[in-house]
Length: 612
Ligand code: HEM
Ligand SMILES: [Ca+2]
Picture 1 (cartoon, rainbow, N blue to C red):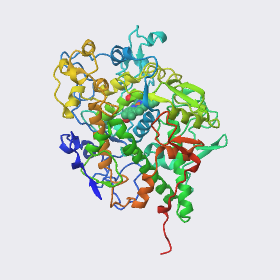
Picture 2 (tube, protein in one colour):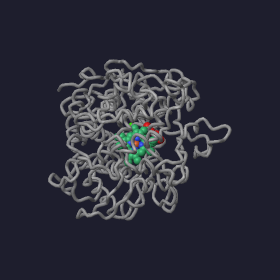
Picture 3 (tube, rainbow, N blue to C red):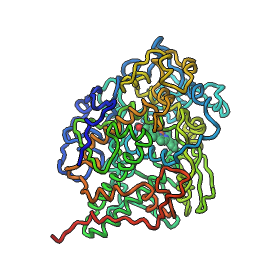
Picture 4 (cartoon, rainbow, N blue to C red):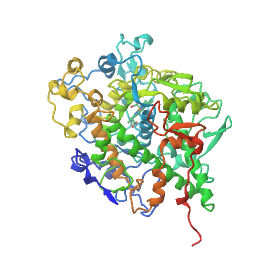
């Protein structure tokens, strides 16, 4: 069997060229106690520790992001970047959204050749690998309320200014968007790190930590401790994951008047319908696997059943991400050429010198570019494919109520499959950029995701766009004119209206304006940074599903079973849907369908022979 190593990459590859200086300060200075690892552990730890035996904290939850480039803060530590030439403040993030992106926003989404799932798989894996939350330790909750006060709390010093004549916010008299700065590793660990670096609260590995929880405590609270299962409760005659608040409570995260609100491994899980569906179906998949395993191995304990089912679900998600999703996002040929593609007859060679940590340029910048495919609407379709309900995505965030009546998950799922998704253009949809979290408590409601993404980049000190291009090895840009070929479809004159100099352009702004690469859904800068991240968290993951000769490696027969599965089969097996397209990402696909009733999972290779 041939092997895929970090040396097979023949394109720009940040890991291979080792241009990135890995900063170990946090681990050396901020973590006093040593962790002891059991090198023969068959299963991953819940928090990602001991994946790398030499550096047990690499990739663990609650460790810092890395930087591919240098930090850009005005004071070299934490204050927001300013204009390159004259040190004045950068243009307001909202001004850029309105002036550069909004003017090209079409009233409805331009239909894509893919469906809703391309958005949902992307967000689901995001929630597995990255969580850079704001620091809510210091009040007020709404940072806009603190403006004008004498001592504005540090974390509230970056609210987004909105003009009185803003085309959307003037209707609701909003002149401030309540941005709150991300929590940093230094403050949380009482350790002086300069410059600041945000903290990742998820495990960086694709290890389904958004489902199981990123700490042992959280994970234990979600287990039933019987038969290896995750806890469930019955709603309308069906089993669902457990709720944060019991039926009858009226608050879910930031939203009032809600009856149902799930408790899962990741705090963002109730964000909107599609995500709720994924969290729920993956949970049911785990419990289904435990049922099948116990039939084969009746003597297995709760712990073995839980860990074996978890290992199965994790490998399944890795296959979906690397085999099915990334080639669509980044282009198949590219994935082949840089070693990202997953193939059945090539093993992944684990490299313990690769730091799996995600980069801020990825989480606060380039992997937000796919926010441009978030569609505006959810459609529910009945068995005859007639629309029964239409919901604006932004008005149904943080609420699961509409999915609880019988057949509603299935109607949602049909809509996610059969309706076309949103074409990847530079702008995000109109609703998510003016009324995101509509219906939430005041101070949180009606935000703009595009402004947040721009501001978040500045918050965590991202290098400007042209510097990240340099990191990727692309030709240097020294003037607006140099951008003419690079941002091929875009009027550079418009950029000049807002940015004083080409050095000032924010990473996410430049990355969104680049034309999409051949065969992919993002531009070349986003592709480079996204590829770097997914290479790190695969080749730097000792437990990745096809790494051989590890205590947790699968047998060939087991891997064959995993490889034969796809997302449509999971959705078939975990809902009451009658049929689904074999290619889960293709809308309007009615020819190649699974008859869901005929799908059977055979876990024979997991049977342990106790007779011999
Ligand atoms: C309906 C779909 C989605 C919604 C409503 C949504 C919304 C959000 C929100 C509100 C944030 C927090 C922003 C902040 O405070 O900085 C966020 C962060 C993020 N989103 Fe999305 N998103 C969606 C889909 C996606 C997709 C498809 C991707 C990528 C493929 C993605 C990638 C990210 C990343 C990387 C972050 C930063 C995560 C972190 O480390 O905290 N999102 N998103
Ligand atoms: Ca994870």
